[in-house]
Length: 349
Image 1 (cartoon, rainbow, N blue to C red):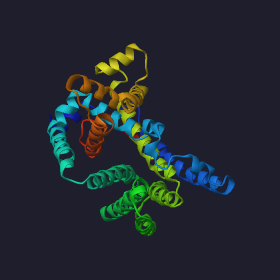
Image 2: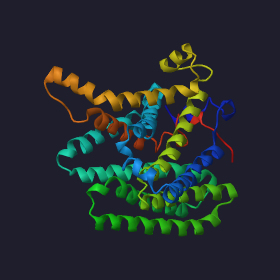
Image 3: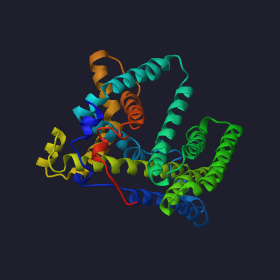
Image 4: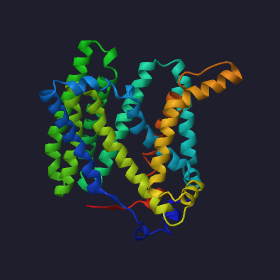
């Protein structure tokens, strides 16, 4: 099915729900809020909050249930839950599945775990920041060179911040200091480039979006340098996840609001569940079940049938696969000409 054929019967005016740029920009309010929390805790409570929070968000089950994994599951449910989308992208989906199985599956037998982890970490950071810069591109309208300068400085700083947080227990003090300094240099370069690039942005609103993405990275570096690791990850995670859900919910309302077209939304209609809450509720529920019970259930079945077990078959294997598929597919499923994009319109500029 060609993109032209898919898009022909649909008009923007028929779409009820829009993705608001003003709402997306408002999400960055978490940035000054987290910095304010840090200052209050530092000067008012002698780091009581920092000492109480887990040293890594991955150690906090509630964080895993609320951030990251749910929107990954939601993305895969949205894509694989519609047969027309699967038919359109089947070759890409199959090819990526084979690549993940070979490189991250069989490759783990030969490639050191640290190398695979760093590749996954870099892809994660790129995915998160590419989404935010991609959204801002529509209002900032930067020249290509300026857009990619901002993007790669953000990603570079983000990768070292990510490494400094999640690998801190395996780094020597000298290595940790080096990682912090490199992240700081890249963050400073990002600030300088933003000062240069803002003159190419045609509107105040666009300038606000440009600086919002820059300050997201700057604040993450600052909070990380003060060892508030949880807050450093919370800021980009919250902005990224809610931005993603705004697309998913808009898609579902515009496609299924008047006439549910899949079994999931027909069942939701019978239960009188609003279309807008179906995917978020299901993704959070599945995340909780998989994180809490997934590994034990799979190992109980494997132990009964084959007298064997698989290390983190669900929390590392299945969710890892879904995450990598999400990073890959999000790069094209919302692009112009995609069958999913026909259900998305924007407002609030």
